[in-house]
Length: 474
Image 1 (cartoon, rainbow, N blue to C red):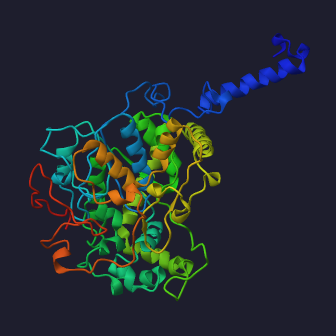
Image 2: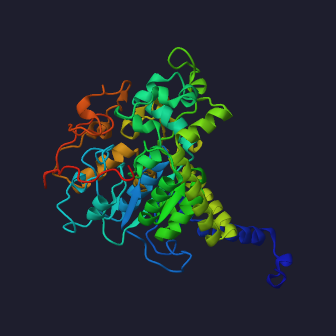
């Protein structure tokens, strides 16, 4: 700095230099725009210029716009789906949307469950990501050949804890157990594979990938399932390392930084806010408490999922090593810093999620299910319209966002089943599961319903075909 003669500058000039340096740093991180002095927010949280989109490990690239995300359960997948919704909505991409809110889950995916589907290659779809039970041949009928396939997995013990809390009233095996520890001690005492929704209680990842989750574990079976998933998917992420996962995903898709900056959606409250009890016997903490021995038992009960998690954990860190550990650390810091900035711009309460009842805008209250409250966010009041719309995309719950996209793509269609929620009605709370019926079981002929009981209509373009595929590796 000697050549600048800083030692001769007065206090005003020194202050000016400091201000310029701070402003330049802010521009690199996207903190400020040209109207920062007027405290205006950026027009959009997704810059559409290619400046931020480049930075792939392979140099300049074009963003992927054909994307298939297998939305596995209880793995932070709702947050990932929100990213896909935002990216596609801002760019006018076409989504492959379900008739209800899931693609006939827990049945295997069928192309004719996509709203507006008229046959292979008749209409191009860009993004598909709602819950399904994966069925590769049927997905390939919907998505173009150059589609990027990815998914996300989670430690099966943590997944079991979340699944128990969320599906306690839905899965008969969980409903019968006094607590997750009680279930872990003797799962077969409570588990009946014939009952609807019991798939939530065993090898849920394996099930979502379209495999037989009730098969007894063998090394050969586990490796064949792993190999089949590897053939189908370009990238498998880890829920426990979400930010690192988003960095890998951003570079794989060649998307801008803001496309993978997110707020955690569909998060559950750790414990009842009022300190109350569940079931008038034990509080939630006791219901989910596990000993080390019970954790080992859950891994054994979910042995196929545990194999997948270990296998893709190794692959994940191999990807990180190829990317570069130092580079990864730098990009994670950048992503987290950007998230903090956008939280200050968008959110009330310091950016912390709040109970649905505290959210004044009923149209963005999250759907409630299970033992614990599902949290959401409130926007800062007084945001200019463009900033508010950009922030709203980041916090809009999954059900309402799907309804919005459905209305945009099918403006003449009847309102979807959840339109009342998006229109402002309070989200319903399902306290009891649907009574299991013989016709509702996976193997029987039945009226097709979503997980919450919504009756699915038929696609008006083509009749729904019967399942022609069988579960693999039986």
